[in-house]
Picture 1 (tube, rainbow, N blue to C red):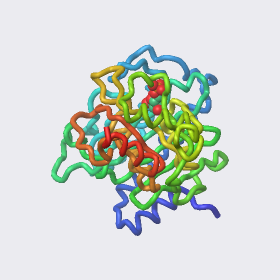
Picture 2 (cartoon, helix red, strand yellow):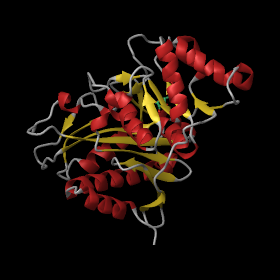
Picture 3 (cartoon, protein in one colour):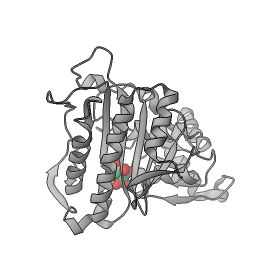
Picture 4 (cartoon, rainbow, N blue to C red):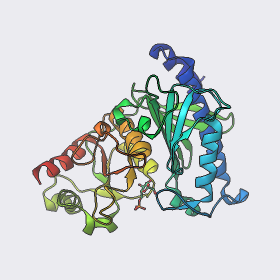
Length: 332
Ligand code: P6P
C-alpha cells in the first residue's frame, strides 16, 4: 500500500516530536489544495475563469480564481485552532484569526494561485504556502510578527495543478513529492527525497526584460545563449512558463536555473517576486533539495523582511549555476 501524505506527516510528527497542532494545520492546507485542484480542473465548466474586475495590493488585476482560491485557503485554515494569523498575496493586510475561533501557535503566508495569468489559457498554475511560528508570548499578532527571515520557516510547500496535481513540501528533512489520486482523493508519496542536480544546461528567464538587467545577469545569459561558441563548456536550452511553481517543479525534477533578477523596469521594485510567500518558501524547498537561492548578492533565506509584500530578486536552482551568477555579481 503506497504511503499517503497524511500518513507521511503523522510519521514525520513522531520523529519531530511535533504536537498534533502542526499536523492539523497541514491537514487543513492539504484540504484547501484539493478544493483548489477541483476548481482549477473544472475551469469554465463552473464559470470560474476570467477577471474578477478587481485589483490586489500589487496593483494586479485579480482573476475570479485568485479570489475564489484565497477564500478557499482562508475558510479551510481559519477555524482549526492551529493559526494565530495568516497573510496572502491577495490581501492588503494580515488576517488575524477571528475571536470566534481558537488561536494556535503558527502563522501562515500563501499565494493561493501563483501564475494565474496562465489560468485562462490552460497552462499549469500553483499554490505556494509557508508556515512560521508565531513569536512566543504574542497572542494578537501584527504585520511585524510575520517579518521573519525565511530560514525560520517550519514548513514550505506548493501544489502544482498540472497534467497531474502534485503537492511538494519540506519540514526541514529534505523535500518529498505527492501525486493526487483523484479516485481516492488522497495525495500519495511518488517522489521521495527530491534532489536538484548541481549542474544544468537549462535556464529560465523572461528575455523580454533583457535591456533592464544588471551587467552580471546580462553576462550570464549571454554566455548561456552562446554556449560552446561563447566559452561555456556546453550548449543551453531555455524555458519560461510564467508560473514560478511550474518552473521550480521542473528544476526539482531535472535541474535548471530560474531567474527573476533585479531590473530597472520599475526602480520602485527590487524585483517582481514577493519574499514572504513566493521567494522564501521556494528557497527553502530548493535548498532542502540541494540547490541554492540568492538575490545575486544575498542568500534569500537570510533576508530580514522590511514589509509584508516586499519584493526581491530571485536566482535559484542548480547550485553550481547559481554560484556562478552570484560570482559574477561579486566581481561586478
Ligand atoms: P512575467 C506569476 O505572476 C509570477 O509571479 C511567477 O509565478 C512567474 O514566474 C512570474 O510572475 C512571471 O512574470 O513578468 O514573465 O509575467
